Image (cartoon, rainbow, N blue to C red):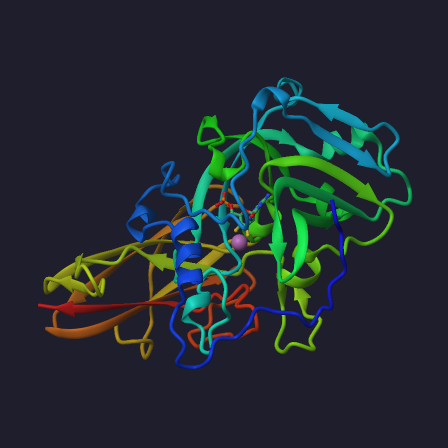
Length: 367
Ligand SMILES: Nc1nc2c(c(=O)[nH]1)N[C@H]1C(S)=C(S)[C@@H](COP(=O)(O)O)O[C@H]1N2
Ligand SMILES: [Mo]
């Protein structure tokens, strides 16, 4: 395990203004698929349609020999196998996960990385055991500062060799209904989602929810590993140390109406009444308003909100669109959370394209 400090200024390379998506980006996009937006119809995203983000390789893990260690600044280090973990208190939580890079490919100029459009999201019912009681059992020492979660996957990023690792402060680790999850929608975790056990940090962007978890280490100093210190930060230029990416910002998405053209995905919609439908979420907050524009963002009207699936999960919304003018339209949708935080309609640019929640736009032709 290597924990190296990297100069905070090192961010994604920024593409030249007219630079197309490269084969390297295409390879990432083919491995890390999004959720087809028509799957917004399901309360819980069916297996295989949930988005996937894997930085390195999906590790092949033999469940029988898998162990989770809890060590570092604790009274009593622990080692658990899957049976021991499953024997602990069991909780279920519906959680909407979204990749912090969602929307990145639309930015100008484009940060070169996994090129998400709008679809890096999914909602699952995770079953597992709460993290806080496990840490309490190990007994955090008084000098505990950060809790570091280590996955079994390994690679290099910008020259830094690493296991996938993320750190949380002790308060964050104990505070937010964090889960060591071994089931997704009632089935054992599939390989791509972190089998046999992953961390789930409800309400946070996905990078915090470490998959293929093998170790939890409590340390007496701040964790400065790559994924906390360099990658998942919002920076406005390369000298900017940035702020860490944490809770998911509000976002609404719609099921694109009508039917698509194969290559352009442009929507073809019959004139008349069109029922628009989608989901909206805001990580640690509740979405209190969803607005729709059918004229590219000039005028807005309120959508009806459905039940929220859980404290950390999306809610549905619907909107009756009277598509009575034949021609091209641009549909836009935006969410606002209970604190009044509204999705921007113009791009909120940052060097790595993190936590960019620019409103979705859908081009359609009414016939
Ligand atoms: N070990 C490990 N955990 C990981 C990752 C990873 O590459 N390795 N990717 C993270 C990121 S960036 C995201 S967005 C989520 C994606 O979770 P999912 O693939 O189950 O949707 O997993 C997170 N946990
Ligand atoms: Mo991510």
